[in-house]
Length: 331
Length: 186
Image 1 (tube, rainbow over the protein chains, first blue to last red):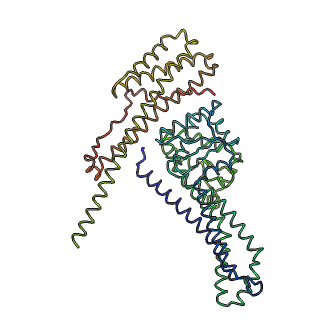
Image 2 (image 1 turned 90 degrees about the horizontal axis):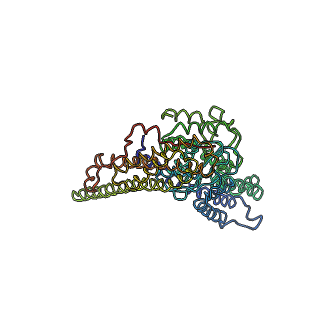
């Protein structure tokens, strides 16, 4: 049942590569939003009428620098950002028996997986959920909700912690943390830019005049402008869908790796059942970090919608499907 | 032209040789490290036992035999030398501890003492750590063994002085069911 090392290694490689592409794509998106805005301004502003010619693409330069800064911040502090957004508190000195048990279980899983011990955090929320973040095993953090600590027995807690260690070992956490940091930024910028242009440029009227004055060049401007507007409208949705798709396939794999760490798929099954039964949404976790969690923090009734739309919008595969796969491993 | 092709093939062969050799050495290091981890966890258990015995001996005055057995098993385990001897002594210690745990179940007043349930959590965690460190050792040792026997890596195995690592076997088949000492008091 042991993983072939090449499997894990190729998974890590894949996640590393995807993370780099994500960072690059993020910066390119911002560059396009910025320089595209410059082109639109250049083509559409009526220079003679207002005495201003838009020559220096300062929007593009600022947006690109800003994006590079944000990408670097997401790389460096993405995990802190996620933890901060859930109001998690770091568990340093365990006080209660439940906290001590979490510390012990985490240490056991570090041994089983042969990784350094992750930092532990507790999310003040009564619902049952857990997530992991950090860019590599050395900087990994694992957070669980207070409700989870209370409701699960030792073996189930171990299974959940093992699932999170699995995400860390596979470098899922790197990719998913970057995605979390960027989904928010993309939504913000696309809203802001759209509004800026809408009010500032009066796009529609100006575009009409541009076509009239500049002929062929104006038509090209319209195409650029339409493409640019389309990006702004679609980007938040696409980035959200990417986040969901990225996390769905990873949950099965992390379940399997967790079962390999604990050699106890049955405990993960009963933990997932308990998590599924706790129907309350995890209020402390916003939509932006949903794909990091072990089960969807939103209202889980939503997940039970079958069919394409339900699947597309769900950040997690249905729990029943995960349980079936675990049972096939002998749980 | 021919000599260029020859040089290219030679370069590829050298690169392959070096990377394969390094991979075997890295795996060997992992195995050695995993083996050390077992030792660390065994020592942790040895250190915890005197505490446990101190805490429970007041309430367990009539169970001197069991306590004595734990202390003796610990002493033997601490002084054991060599893989086989260590394995045997540690198995005995696990069994002695198991009996002690079973006894504490029979004394409800013990559970009321906060210290005891804390210690029990520590000890069941230690048992788990020992089990998991063995499991991890077996995992990396298996990887190492498979790697050095697979073709063409096996051609380099001699150069890297790779020999199959011994797996940690569970000697007593009855132990398979026991190792989980779960006295979680909730």
